[in-house]
Length: 517
Image 1 (cartoon, rainbow, N blue to C red):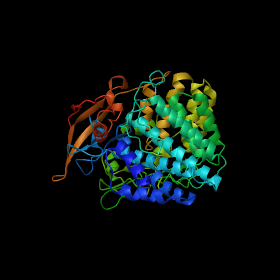
Image 2: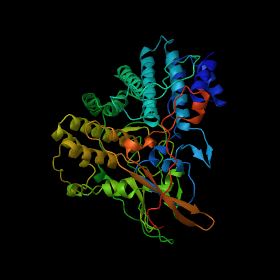
Image 3: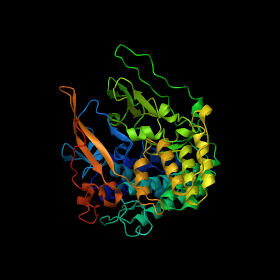
Image 4: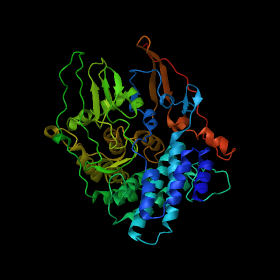
């Protein structure tokens, strides 16, 4: 029976039904014990170690095309903010983000239902229930920030969010989109329920949620909602945990290696992200920038090698020098692989030097520095500027050359918020937060910020090994730009026969020439 239930849910939400789901749903049908259900949750509710959502890095202002080996990538249409980004060679492909999120949510709903029937091991049952609510809240948070407008209190009750499904049984209906307010209400309910269920429970590993992971995510969600007291409380709760900041002054200094026969004199950083590090609170999925090493200009080593065709933007590289008066920032040395052979001295985001099954996620990662930044932002919005500055200095003192470190002058109001946003961009680059941050900054009720972003696009002709500048694409400021929201997948629109309303149509963006190349 469960087989038909889960398949029915997936058909409605996904618009199709892959054959492997039959095996997956049969596994659920045979799961009867806590141990069985934990295995199902780990295998079907959590993201596996090869799953990532690298497209989210392509649209912001932290990456530029590197143009090293190919004239096409899977992320090209995200990079140029195309009208429908899930296209390859003019052919629509399935939106795997939507599919993956709702598959996992469906599995979570069934696990939650079956846990109600287990009467023994109540502590373990509650722990698994807590993990389920955490994951479902996290997935809906990612979905609503992908397929809906950013949260605005005044319009959230009418802005369209994403379809919400919290039960395991079939409903003989076509699904419609809930509002942004309804979506965030469920996210909060799920996470607050998870916090209650997981409090005091034994932590399994950084690859499974615990109470601190829930509070860490809540500190982020509350910021998006403008609930600053709650964000502060959640952050402070995490800071009571057994986590410590890495001091980059204690890392081996990264220097260029002697040039080899090809004239390469590259600078390769050490890993600053790792599930075993004392900054890591939770991680799931793969790291898109892990092992992002280049050789003769050709990317290799990464599970998602398409990302290696994108380098750190000049603006991102330069922002690490913006507060140089307070000391030299060590993060560029440890966050970026520098290709010395290339005349432009390309910088590639690389916080992990190897790509493996245990790398930290580049989209679903929670770590201590973010909690400090969330706390600082909440304090700034509560007009507690000196306290916010003190929190920022807790992070900076571990990121700046010790002999040069000087506390920054105290700032307040908009200047303080600008500093926190800059620090967030520096510290969290390559972790999947910049695009979502740009969206929420644009609608900030007190200090709105939006900008035009220009992406230069190139064509690489492998037959003659020549790069040609195609043109540039511009993302306008948020107020007049529909491309801050990803379209609802076409196969979902078609299957639900008009009941699933799409987002505002994105323009067919045309390239313009801004330099001779």
